[in-house]
Amino acid sequence: MSYEVNKRWRGFTLIELLVVVAIIALLLSILLPSLQKAQSRARATMCASNLRQLSIGWLTYAAEHDDKLPG
Image 1 (spheres, one colour):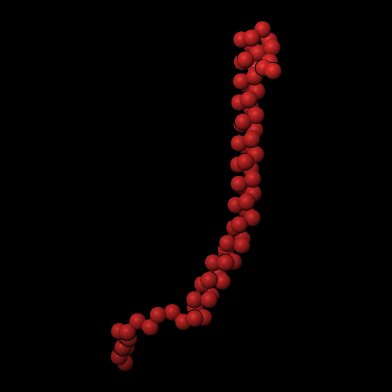
Image 2 (cartoon, helix red, strand yellow):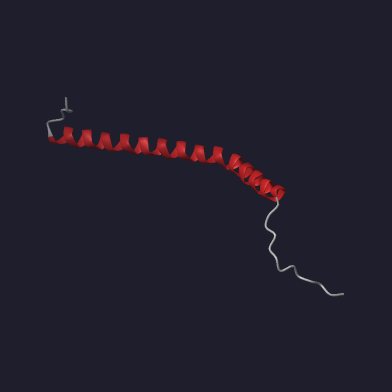
């Protein structure tokens, strides 16, 4: 038995291409909600950090100006 290798590249069929696109779309639909949750948590952490920095700034100002907060 001789096995002949086809030397001409025939490319992808339309069905193969559609299957790959469907798999990619499915993976994205699974991952997107978890990425949005992570982004929401990152924003909440940044907000908490900003509030902490503002509080430190106000307390430092008050300590240097006879315990009075800025107007």
